[in-house]
Image 1 (cartoon, rainbow, N blue to C red):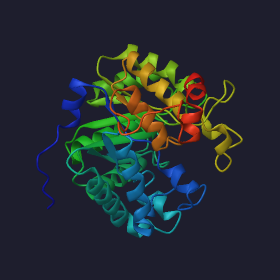
Image 2: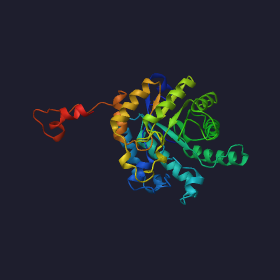
Image 3: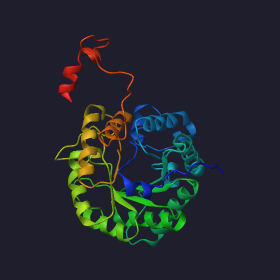
Image 4: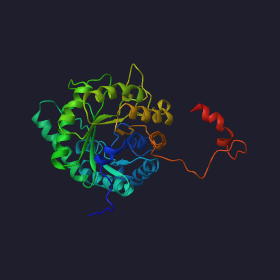
Length: 333
């Protein structure tokens, strides 16, 4: 058993005193770095290229993030079986948890990760049993995390089942986030506000939104959820520019392997962090496309990151192009 001392403040204690900054996106970043295959987007990297996960966690930590999420998105047995890793589900989830715990040290929290299974069906006892078992297996494998995040749920029913399994199997705090595509409705017919209320009433410690939408198209959902319940709210947008016609990034022609030209800037994510805080969001993070540079800008906006004080720009006697163009650069921000 790994013993950590001193014990850091838990997620609820941190939220009670300040906004918490989560981390950014991993799966798309790992694909762009050549570690996973476009389309599958599965987390076997924790055993095939653990150094890649380790490096991404370091980057998020150095950028000012306060939580590292276990890189186990799409880490269920059924999903991993599509790429031949189903029999290594426990090993993959355990390895991902160990890496996150190692890099987090005593300062950062580690969040377990559960996600939509694509196996849930409304009013199906067989589907509920299957999905419950998938969640339970990952929860068991991710033993030692500080809290759990259940993410990318399009159906409120599956989100509620995930919440139930977290509370029943682990007893840890649970953050459940919904995802929306073309409108504010879940696939089982609930509005964003209804989903937020149901999850809060069912015992979710944090309720919110993640993925699919860029900041501009996530703001309306944030406002709707914030008005719906009195509890901790989370928001984690993507860093790929969406359109009014297609407000979710997986619907864009650029998805999944032509995303680079659509990436939004670090400063737009910094603006999101500021605006989200003002809107009453308590847990602010990033999802697909949010690199360490995006998270660092968000950390700056939230007062959680200080620039290296050893260097200050001197445009009068420049020693780099950055200094030479400092005034122009400042005007462009």
